[in-house]
Image 1 (cartoon, rainbow, N blue to C red):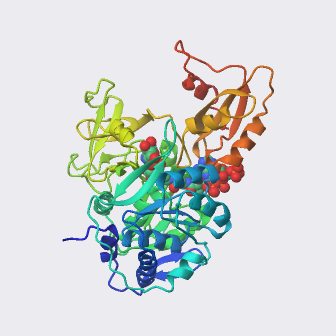
Image 2 (tube, rainbow, N blue to C red):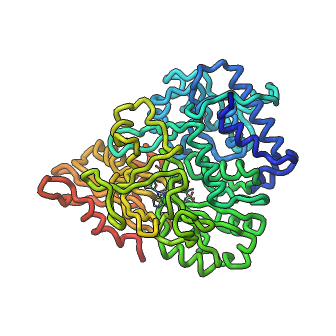
Image 3 (cartoon, rainbow, N blue to C red):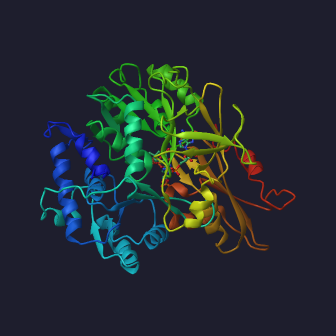
Length: 514
Ligand code: MLC
Ligand code: AMP
């Protein structure tokens, strides 16, 4: 029987010269394809020696490093389920994820071992390893004692490969279960659609705990046997300097905005580049146009989400299905990918005609299996005929281009990270002296959108805005902290007493715009 383990497909795409560089880091280190193979075999053998139960989760909160990439690949290779966690998450957030996912293995940085291991052992995790971004830690120490040969564990298309937590609109985060089949199908589709070719080199500038950096970028390079120029942290100057040795760049809009602020970005700097891809948040038309003017390249914008990986993309080459359209249209997210079915539905559940705005629903081999241990939530998010309700609101024009115009989910996307107002409001409302709060997203020149908190104090109590933000900072990941807080007498409400967030958004919309 064929082994559908995603690792096997990635491994099969390694180039024949295994001594060639697979990853070059911004510290000047070179890792060969052979290094990737051997190190992931050793880590996979370490996991095997632990005799973990079938389907075990491996939860990982570590800084970006090539060893962290190897840990991801080793988890796939060993047939377990990878659970990446943003390094910004603090103890309350980590406690929830570990408690909910019940991982058999947790890997954290040495600096966090004290508090993370306490949480993990309390949740019943048997093994806690450390991995630091300077190639030290108990994971590597233990792995070196194992063989560098390992046969990828057989997996079926429908077997779990990863769980990605996406914050919930209400209540707690949900773990999106992605299978080996989901990810391989998406990687192969994108390889073809984006015209990956021999000799392509990817600048890897994104964090590796979300879909964009972990799946789209890594799978894209590996399934094409392409080298990656690996940036531990995005730096616009360095990214531009890398472009004379690279051909493909992927980034959230903020990365493009920051590169545009660099005088070194010009046509000469990008002359070796083939493709610039943007996604995870709306790319402003101004950024799209300015990039075109400065570099002569047209950014290719695509759209996806944790539950589905990539769904739509502007064309790289003419798309045969849409009258051979080859134009990348700013402000749109392009066409549904070849194996994705996408429809726009009205509130009455009926398909909407071309150009009309409604809820985007999707179906395809890339669409996830459901939310971890939340069958009711899963059922709610799928239609009776098997379409996933994305929560994004959009339209399709007569040429087939999809445009996202908003979200039915109350969500702020800040610098490509998702922030759920309900979660922040929950924390603020628990604070001493607070009667109520509302968090809204407003435009921001760097992050695209940022949160603003509007708070009402209890009668007779004085609440300081700075104190609200400081208290949040102590509890939540830094990117979730609203950039400003206002204490006001009342919140605007409609006749049903519901807070009118649209009015608040309008009131504060110019806060960060010069
Ligand atoms: C950092 N901060 C942020 C922030 N990132 N605030 C809001 N939104 C963000 N995204 C905070 C910092 O903690 C700091 O707070 C202050 O803002 C200034 O930080 P900075 O130094 O400017 O930030 P930096 O470290 O440079 O990070 C910015 C960034 C990073 C844009 C490089 O956020 C990033 O890598 N974003 C990419 C996210 C991503 O990969 N998304 C893909 C999701 S997948 P203080 O208080 O400490 O000063 C997905 C599906 C799909 O959505 O379709 O792809
Ligand atoms: P996440 O849950 O982190 O995977 O974020 C997914 C969400 O990001 C989607 O549901 C969209 O709302 C948003 N998103 C991703 N790509 C784009 C894009 N190109 N334009 C607008 N929104 C996007």
